[in-house]
Amino acid sequence: MPAGGPTGGHVLRRALADQRRRVVGASVLGMAHQACEALVPVVIGLVIDEAVATGSSGALLRWLLVLAGLFFVLSTCYRNSARLTEGAGEGAAHRIRQDLAARVLDPRGGADTGRLPGALTAVATGDARRVGSVASALPYALSAIAGLAISAVALLRISVPLGLTVLLGVPPLLLIGHLISRPLERRSEAEQEHAAHASGVAADLVAGLRVLKGIGAEPAAVSRYRETSRSSLAAALRAAGSRAWHDGAILALTGIFIAVIGLVGAHLAMRGTISVGDLVAAVGLAQYLLGPFQLLTYVNGEFAQGRASADRIAEVLASPPAVAAGTATLPEPLVGRLRLRGVTQGALHGVDLDIAPGSVVGVVARDPAAANDLLLCLGREVDPAAGTVELDGVPLSDLDPGDARRTILVAHHDADLFEDSLLANVRAGADNDGADMKAALAASAADDVAQALPKGVDTLLTERGRSLSGGQRQRVALARALAADPPVLVVHDPTTAVDTVTEARIAARLRDLRRGRTTVLVTTSPALLAGTDVVVMLDDGRVAAEGSHPELVGAHESYRSAVLA
Image 1 (cartoon, rainbow, N blue to C red):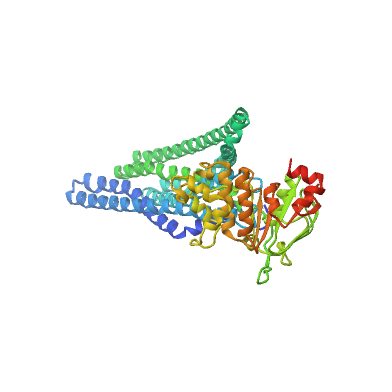
Image 2: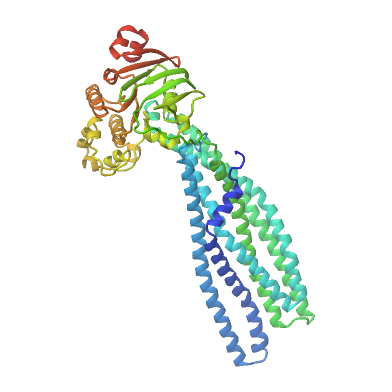
């Protein structure tokens, strides 16, 4: 975790601070509720001493009215406190999810490094809920402490020894409860880690289910998930066992403490130090104390699990960005000239490349890793380890990542579709919802896809567009990239699942639609490369050849093998 980054404590304090009003309101009402509950046995004791023992009907009626008033206030405070408490918990969890979403969607990236998407989802759901529970539990803790304090005062009024028993006994019990919660905190963190990993693996397997079936790898996938699930189950059982031990130990200590109070009260009554009504009140208060102690047990467990989840959330929020923020601005008007100077990153080694404004350039990479690293650098998902990528003379590393990506749109080969209509998926790339999508649909041949669907462009697609074939998904994804109409468009293998006739039509229409704007096609498709102004071939991470598609086909054996094989 980088220095100065958020910690679990920061996450908890932020969650509580955002819900301060609800927490304070719920705490006040909760304390009033506990005060009324604590006073009920005291009033019953007074009924016995002042009404039953004396036979006074007036006193009986008076104290019964007081008792009815207590129950009315008690009920009203409980309902409103519960509403505010739940609202505080849900509000805190919602704010944490917003913070996590903002970090994950931060243009600088880095939050997903080393984490499966399912693991991030588990953090944003399970861990956020547990931290939100801390905001719900705090009013319960304050109201329980208030109940203990009021009980101690009432017992002091009845008998100093009884009051001192409570006042001197509660702090050690709270300390022991805190110490007992330590194993629960550790095992809760391990449980959430294993559960997040299991969710990530499950999401990964479901996403690749068709591929797994195609290569007959279902047994290996099932075995992998079974092992992960068993590990998660074992961690959950350890955490549940720790929670059971924690709750049981606290309950046993509480029972012993209450029994001591009852014995002290009975001893005092037998000696005549306190009245029968006082004894009834003392026993009632001793029984009532079980409630606040159970609340504190619950709160202690919630705090232990909340601290563990807060630490995991803090790790995501404190993830170092993949690229730094920049402050430079692009010149106006933007012409779209790209220059790579000595770019070294992963499989790329000192790549020099000039892409003229408004040109259509093909890039053939014999090593798929080199193509991927080039896309990452152009999309500013990473900054080159050495060298620079410039847009109109401005290094991309000096630009804000969001500005860079709005100017240079990189459409990856494996782009996913959303669970929405076909038209909504295409519009997702456009700044203007009212923009005409017909040109983008036609250029990508996605209009043919729409015609084959029951409701045309308004047909709802399933998750990740799985209701479409591979070629149809590619065409819709390409339409989305074209609809964005960026100054510089970089497209990676947009037609690998498309038939040759459709591919040729896309090649011709794409060039016409992008006329006057810079377009880079990272592909080995002869149809697409034939429509480019120039083709650059990368071999062993370096520029090995440059020229038109026909020239390279005729002059370079390695190019022919890469493109025509």
